[in-house]
Length: 66
Image (cartoon, rainbow, N blue to C red; front, top):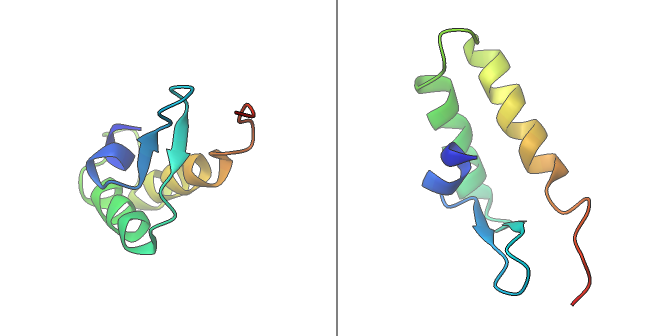
């Protein structure tokens, strides 16, 4: 989540405080790049990228109505 926030790929909903995807392809690409370069020692670059993409793909699956 911190990588996604750093890359400005996500933001907090002003009404609910839930995470929202900014739908910015450049921010998504930047977050993947950050994850691949600054990964935890327990993950490979491919696994770090997969984790970021999984989180991005799941954002918005459950979001309360206004």
